[in-house]
Length: 269
Length: 269
DNA sequence: CGACTAGTTGAGGCCAGTCAATGTTGGTGG
DNA sequence: CCACCAACATTGACTGGCCTCAACTAGTCG
Image (cartoon, rainbow over all chains, first blue to last red):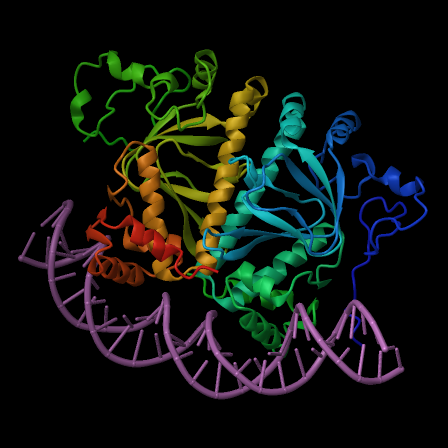
């Protein structure tokens, strides 16, 4: 049977994760419920990966108090669009997003895929406008962090200040990796690296690192990797034929991660 | 000869920094002189583009006091190498640098070109090690800014804090632009964009935006743009043949910037 | 002067793009 | 339940842009 299946783990304290499900906002019966309690940094399963990581309870409370609003997005909804005034960063609580940059002539390219614990919007700081657009790849929840308040709070809480710098620096490093991939790797190397990177990110969040479900289309993968969707599709088929992966639709299983890794760094020097 | 080779400056207040110039001008008579006065943020010609931009005199003095040492690099010298412990950011006072990322397998790619007023080393924050290496493209002077002290000072000086965020965010935006270029533009578009970007950066520094000298080889340009040196060379020749530019060795003159701009965004949508 | 590095130019090959046909999947409504 | 449709994906045949390999020139330095 297919069943390469969906990762349904929770990370950290698995309290009750009610309605993890895509079904839109809390249907009828607006109970206060456990769900509302959950919506605080202190109980968020992503707290160790997110901005308040490493802060003590009091500090985390301050971050919590700063949070503007928690927004739910349905698949396809834009969190922000390029050119909109920048006011806040967004921490992802649940789901996933893609960010896309667009050139003046309308060309558009995926610049990143983001999952729970990630922070998006960092490129908007420098121009006071969002430099790219962020779109939900599935039903997604984010916390808005008004940037001016982050800066204020960061002055009082060195740990928060440093975390912010870590996140920004990490984004820069990540982008450099993508540039390396786009500029000097062949299609198969880029795709293998992409699969491995996703695996690592799932692993860090407590999910399987060998079995996961892609949240994006072949075209979106291609856009991110500087390839056409046909090329991505062909490569998936080839990887499968070579026994490196098993892929059925968007469900991927990495059968031989080591070989994939070798593939990436095959033409070293 | 003088051999400005190794960084032999003192920390803190710059006492005598002799031999500002390559020509042995400073030779005899180690005068305190006007030249020493110049080596302060307040009198640095890059201050409006650099980290202390917009700060008042007192604040700028604090930044100035924080500066670790001012280092001189000869062409080809490495300011830092990938993997070295990260301790400071570097502000470029004079000259230019390239930064290169390298893959595990030894592949190397230019990730950026940096000129006076730029800040390099931002990607090292997240891992406490430099993620790339920075090499001088010509004789170059930089100011070392110990990062822990930047963070301290940023807590007291909101303007500095915000500037730091601006720089990091700008780096992210810049990288996104490069990713867009690498991922979805043709060779000629990338090169035209590269020439225009350089022009803009020279302009902002008060230099001609239509006539400048490249500091890097064809191979380095190619590395940055994901192209081979032969392709870069051929394109330069073609651009010249088409009357877009005039190029002799590394001296470039943009004859028709508008046409270049159109070239970049030719296949819109 | 010879050795070396940087740059130019040509010929041919290959990887990924393009165009096109077909298959698969998931959601909707009868 | 099935028919239907649109979006997504696969696969093949062909093309072309950039890479590779190679020869040659120009400038620099010891």
